[in-house]
Structures are given as structure tokens and as C-alpha cells.
Amino acid sequence: MQNFEFFNPVNIVFGQGQIKNLSTLVPSGSKIMLAYGGGSIFKNGIYNQVKAALPGFDLIEFGGIEPNPRYETLMKAVEIVKKEKIGFLLAVGGGSVLDGVKFIAAASLWEGGDPWKFLAQRSKFTVTQALPLGSVLTLPATGSEMNGNSVVTRFSTREKLSFYSKAVLPLFSILDPTVVFSLPEKQVANGVVDAFVHVIEQYLTYPVNSPIQDRFAEAIMLTLVEEGPKVLTNRTDYDAAANFMWAATMALNGLIGAGVPQDWATHTIGHELTAFHNIDHARTLAIVLPGIMQVKRENKKEKLLQFGERVWGIKTGTADERIDTTIHRTVEFFESFGIPTKLSAYGVGNESITAICDRFTQRGIQGIGERGDLTIAEIDEVLTLQL
Image 1: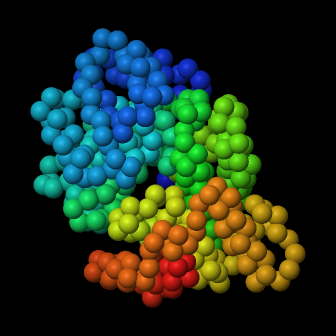
Image 2 (image 1 turned 180 degrees about the vertical axis):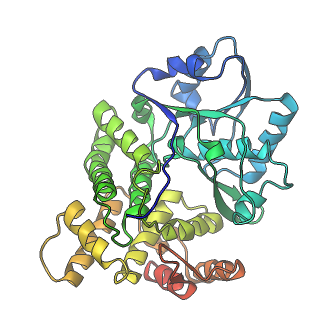
């Protein structure tokens, strides 16, 4: 196992009816910006629950945060925060709203010029301070409710980039599984695949004798395999919804990544597909991952075989045959949720592959992945396999 630092102070308040406890979680006397997305919280009753739980607080609302939150939109919120002297940010929504609020929290106190710098030049600029924030999660998927990660899209330049800071870890996150009951099928499917690939990015690398992290990761994947279809079949199955929600949170709160190498090449490439074509984040992951598994099958051989045996139950055949079956079973799992894994299903062709590879070249990227050796030529190969 590698050396690591694990720090996660987020207070998780889990279960049905927990939104009523908001007033005890938000710092007393705070002037709050209540931020949300396109309005689903009005339809499912979450908005009314949140408002009822915060009597006496000074609230300013900011709606319209997009899926793949846009820098241009978030900067409007930053202006309001500064003008109104907001002291606390409350994200009510899924991962996009949370990611957007984290950016707002950091950008509102940023003194280094354009806040885009801490995304575009991560090696030079680090976020060290941010406004305090909390969340009421309405969509299990990204794990943003329990980590310091944020991904933001700059619409004007068609870029999708991320930053990490301990300063934007939420003070608390309320997770009520009943929010899953009203989610569209597409969002549930995306959520299951998103969480599954988060685990894969921290697991499918190379062995470092980390049995605890490996088995935690395998348990999360097996839970998603078991519970995801149940949620789609019966949206009001509370136990399935609860298990799905907790699995998505545990997939990216730092625990399973402690002391192990991490990949994130699937996400890095997938972000470009979203930036250029606005494909749902989870669906870009389902496209890219099988190609990476194929192109890097020798580098990832030991963990691919372990993944195949422990998650898919593949124990017979030669090593190559088992890896082939493992990749096939993973694709089947994604497609069982109605998520295509080929670029052609989204109308994406060779010209986009060239544009993505050119962008990596322009950024001076030599290689990505857990060893930094997935080259631009191999990124081309990965995407070409997935046409």
C-alpha cells in the first residue's frame, strides 16, 4: 500500500425526513444563498421542505445551474454573493449543482484574478479558502456531496475542467433516499454508471497489496450491480434507493482511493466528449472505459483478472479469454441500463477524435492514467475502438 493522507470531515445526515434538520446544521445567523438547477425541486417537493426547514434565515435564491455547470452562469452567482455579502451556500440538487456551488464558494473569495485559473492552471493555482457550504442531495451519482472535487464547463471555449480543494468540502450533506422515487429513468441509469466508473478509476490500475481498499471497492461495485436494477424496476423501493445512494457517496469520498494508484483517464477523455458534444457525463464514461480496458489490458492485466473474478464471477478460460469476457460483461452492464457504449450512437465521428487529441496536444499533455503512459496516440486508439 502506498503512503496516503485521508481527511473527510463531511457530516452525512442520512435517511427519510432528514431535511427538517437543516436549521440545526446551517451556522446560526447565516445569510444563505440557496442554489439549485432547472426546477425539479419544485416538482418533487424538496424546495418546500427546504424552505420550511429554514425559518428565520435570510435567503437569496439562485436557480438555473445547468447539468455540467457553466462558468458563465456561476460567475453571475459570484457577483450576487459579493454584492449581498452571502455567508453560507446551500446546494439543493445533484452533482452539477454541488460542483457549481463549490466553484461559487471558491471564486467568491478568490483574489488571483479570473477564477478560471484554478481550473485551467491547477499546477500553478490552488484554492485555499472558500465560503462554507452544505448540500441537500437530490440525485445519487457523483459523490460530490462528500468530497472536495468540482467540475465546471466554460461554454464559450467548450472546455470542461476540474479542481480539488479541502476548502470546498461541504460542512454537511443531507441524503434522503426518497428523492430517488421521482427521478427519471435516465437519471437513475446515469447515476449507477457514474458511480460504478468512479470506483473503477480507483481500482482498475495495478496491485499495491491493498486488500482493504480492493474489497471496499468490490463491495461498492457489487452493490451497484445488485441494487441498480432494483431501483429502475421499482422506483419506490426504499431499501434499494438507500443502498444505491450510499454506494454512490462511498464511491468517491476518498476512502477507496487511499493508498492506491488512481487512473482517471476515462474521466479526462470523457470530459472532452461532453465539452464538444454535450453528451451526459455518465454516458461518456460508458463509451470510453471499454476502450481503455482494451488498449491497456496488459498494464491492467492483474486487476482486470481480479475484477472479472470478484465482480463478474469469471474464473475459467485463459487470461486473455477472461479479460475479453470481463470487458464484455462490463459493456453489457452499461447497456442493460439503456446506455450505448459506442460513439456512433451519439453521432460522433472521426473528426471529433482528432479534435480531442489536438486539444491534449495543445495543452502539452504527454500521457494520462495511473502510470502517465496513456499517450495521445493511444487516446486516439481508445476512441477509434469505440466508434
